[in-house]
Length: 209
Length: 200
Image (cartoon, rainbow over all chains, first blue to last red; front, side, top):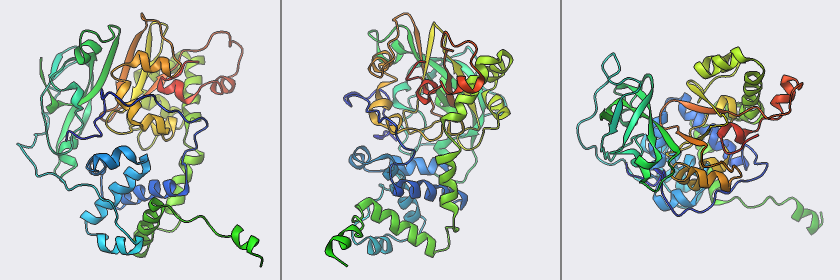
């Protein structure tokens, strides 16, 4: 989805605020949320892709105005309510007020991608173009590389395609590739001539370029 | 008991987010989904045992042992496992080497991917919108703001952890530290140097 989480290349955020001597967790509730996420994983109530997508489905204003572990809390709560493990009513009764959840999954669109063949389609050194895919569901293809030309620098293994794994139990494995993009390809002629960004992309995100 | 003592023992009221967390934990406990002690066991591992001190040992070993460094750059996951480190978010680690001509820096623009077994859990700034937005678009400017002033002729390679690979930077070995033990060298290595937002 073209969500607020897809931040690469967004302007206007100002400086990076670094906290000196930052603790691993800032408060007791953050520890509990980290632990609850592990509970859902070991109970197989979610997977990485569905969990990430539940964060991405947060209202954009809530996403940008809440601390990191509140993203996790909202996603965990959303997943548990969507699966019927807890009801929104029992939660709100206990909280004594509204409990913010993420927006529902958007209806699927387009043909679902197919698994890779047994051998990789691309090799190191190949030039590729990132397809202009615009799925409403989960994807790990950032907007800032779509339509851009890059070079394969690494062929990695076959991994489950997040676009499928976030939404169903269906198995769809594809090769992933390290793809290097010159900064000027991504950001125009005024960009740094001595900078490049490498992005790791699944096979169905790419076409020969 | 005096009013003064009474005040001392009033806990601060819970914030809205704390109320939500407590409600969720209670409900899941009542439904039998949380095994006693599970959350503390998971969390305390990341507070005590898993952190940048692990990555620092990897870096120090690579500085003193050229054969280890070669293995680390060829297969990061396997070389890191030689020192006993591995686990969630470290199943596929690629180590990228800084040199006088090339500077590497790691990000996850879509969420917060980070090599947990060697660096622990990421700091807030790494997960924050400004870092994720800007490091891919204006890396030299942002690195300068963060204290790394690179000459224009030093190539910058930004690694966006968008799939299964997790990245760690192998910083350059500082000059003038001959004769230090491997443990002393590890003590010089910082978390940010292994992300690429600092140099040693």
